[in-house]
Length: 133
Image (cartoon, rainbow, N blue to C red; front, side, top):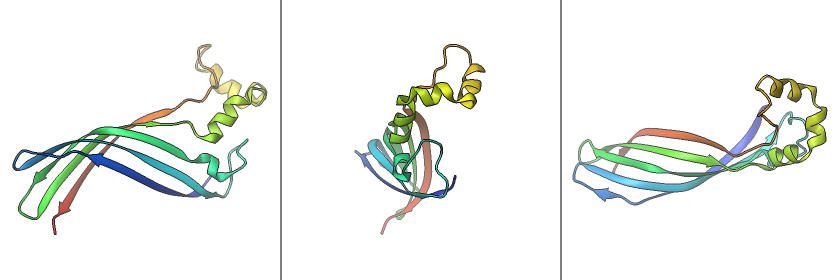
């Protein structure tokens, strides 16, 4: 599947200045929406069902290279909420029970694995160079 997605986010930080280094805790969200898709996965009726909301928190620092340039590093931990497509498929147990492909996949992981969808998580690390105007 290929598609067109748009993304919008907000990251709030509280900077604490220590001279050449500024440390900051950060928290925010990141929202992604699927505008269109050329081939939707099974059981997904609308491209908009593939969107996702991430809640992120972490910390970062700015290191002043000189009066106008700085190096910024941010590390964030994100938790992704379940999207509508995942919720719909996990609620439709008949689809999952009757899907030979899913049954074969889960059989390889043992009896403790089921087909219930869940939220996701991940780490994001950014390094950038900034300029003060």
